[in-house]
Image (cartoon, rainbow, N blue to C red):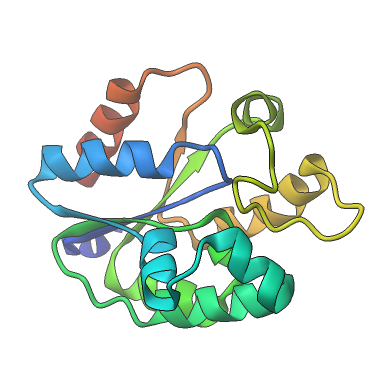
Length: 170
């Protein structure tokens, strides 16, 4: 693990609502890195909002597009916040795992439910009839598989989370 810690890119993964973008901005400031939100890169590249792309291309089509965009990220000295569904893109995850330290921001399903509100508005890719619990159980093993570090975020303040990540990267 020590060898991997030399990488100068941090990639945040986790469920929608886990705080990847919020933690990412603060962590980037603390490390003196740039911040990249892969959802914003997708929207910029395609000139549409996430939910419009999902409506237009379907869930699998969106995941393919997300995989291509994430697999093309070549940023150095930055913190990248990925979309919650990024873990479905094997090429992208392997690419990002190679480039940086993958940090899984872990929260309980109950906490996510309270934070999220309207899932469609958030651009959360749920299959017809799928619940947040079902999605959580489907994705959790993928986050655990790709993560170099897992950070428990339940009931913790933003600064505590950022501080733990910073210490564990040092």
